[in-house]
Image (cartoon, rainbow, N blue to C red; front, side, top):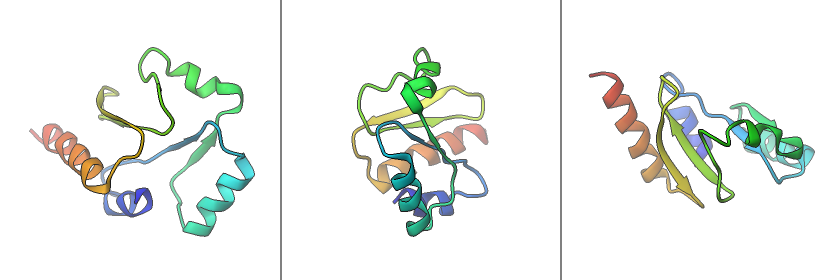
Length: 99
């Protein structure tokens, strides 16, 4: 679902993955096999997550964040997110930005 949405919004949105609890090699191999080409970063020891502790605290894995062009949090879903929910959140941010 994230692959499809990243392709659908490729001209307007940047998707990024942070691998917090996955084996890095296995996760990146999965991404390659699935054709996921948005960047994913391994978070060894939680350093990346710690850097976002004030602005994007993750209380559950997975957590999906939508951040606007100004770096403000526009939405967060803890746990699994559906394609329609995430697309709606992205559409809302894009509509707000075009006003």
